[in-house]
Length: 400
Image 1 (cartoon, rainbow, N blue to C red):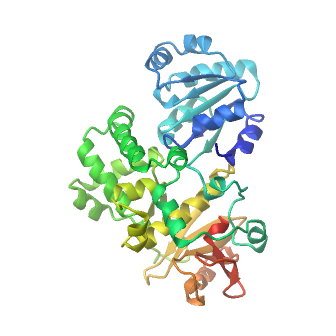
Image 2 (image 1 turned 90 degrees about the vertical axis):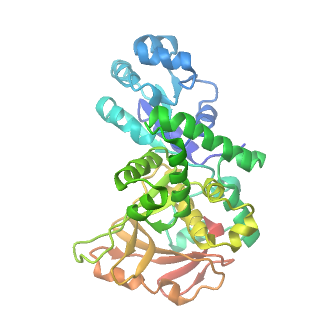
Image 3 (image 1 turned 90 degrees about the horizontal axis):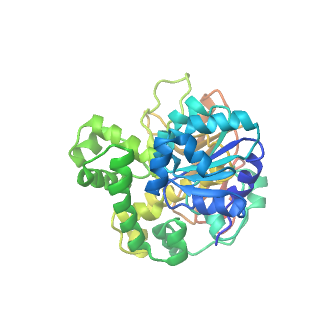
């Protein structure tokens, strides 16, 4: 059993809000985390249970009389009718920590939340196990500062171990059992047969699976809807709608470009990242970690892994991630910009153990922007942190 970093945030935030909602993809451990935090002091019901779901949809008031608070309601997106009934109880009781909700369709939930529960609910995001969680280490939001580096030193794994972890992915059940192929096959079948048609309204499972695989093959790349639609055999409108389905399910993340009004020459397309590298590798049919490391996706999948780990360091500490990337018409690109404290921190991802100063050669373009620029980093395969210049440090991926 892994200790999740988000535990302390849940315990703190539940004392400040009457409702806590935990969102994230299926099977990342939302229910387990809530049950561990509750320590048996809460009732529990899941709307995967068709009887409970039917009651919640048909008679929300009776449902909340049957399953009394303090209550964990799992997969609450199946019964948005509950939100108004929960609001009545919360406004009457005027207590914090009454309801803990989970949902695996984040954006599908937001309409009901904003209409009924605004100001009453805290929303947290959970992904699969982070590198630090798997190793039993604490984690703080990543920033390429000397203080962060000093507080997060860790031994460097071998290249083989890194790609094995990337290939396996971060779903707790895979990490615990090692049954990777069986898990991902079942996961995709469940997703295509239940969530996609029932919740998200997509009924062409074969084409959607092809689309899902095409997105996985593009992880770490700028998104081109025309190319994507052509490869799958659908139109641009359908491609955009289906991509929103993947975002809703918590399977992909769109990293938007950073703009400032000082220039109109910045590229506007987002970059796309698959949010679990194991599922991504399964969909793109890499049979072993060794074939993955030696293959055409080696660099892109390492970049994806590093981006996800940084994202988890924010979300699993209950923080928003103000992330962007930079690319202009002259093809000068910076993989990640972290916007924190009115300062931009530039980050590059490199599959190298011997980075040079050219790895950060485009950081200087940020001087034309209106924000102050903080120290930068090249996240790579070095064994310990080393300075590349006065303002840029090479940081081992093991520190994340």
